Length: 268
Image 1 (cartoon, helix red, strand yellow):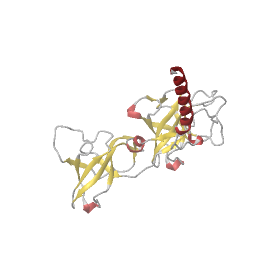
Image 2 (cartoon, one colour; image 1 turned 90 degrees about the vertical axis):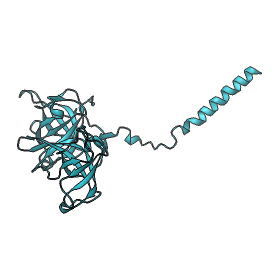
Image 3 (tube, one colour; image 1 turned 90 degrees about the horizontal axis):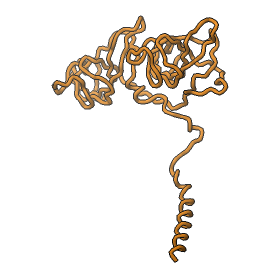
């Protein structure tokens, strides 16, 4: 009797298991064409990266804080005071990007680092109070504020770097600055290059990195990167994949059109 009950239990378990399998993925929309897609541009890339500030430094700045402590760094929900008010067009509810304006890079402008956001909560004619939000770096008195622009993320596929380059084709650019002033970087690190919107560069473009050799060696790409921010003459890029470290002396080029990957190639 006991053995029969055990056999019946095993049979019922098998039936339930088979019937249940189709429901394991219930409610999930699976699109085979999107299986290789991944977030190429993240929130951090959009609002916590660096770029080149062109022109005069911003006038709107953090000049004081609401609560005085020994803590130098400001954090989320801290309230700060700004040097302009309603006379300069500030209104309650406006959102600004907090930036730290750094040293100048050649004749391109100054390195600017995005440090978070500030939302105006009180305004009078000559000053305003703002609450800090989404802080992602060091925020302190003296940092500047610029109008905040909502930017979309980017889903896609790393196109890799195994693409044949043709000597003398396409615009060639160079690196101006590597992540945190490093001399070499790898995947997920950011950098500044000397190609911008006037060269046809757009956010989401994937560019190739190559290293110049002797005249007898064909140029060969070894890294792929994506554009995450664009100015007129410069862009901010993020390394997606590479088979060697990227150096400040390396060259940048647009991806050749109507080309296919080399045989057996794939991104590392």
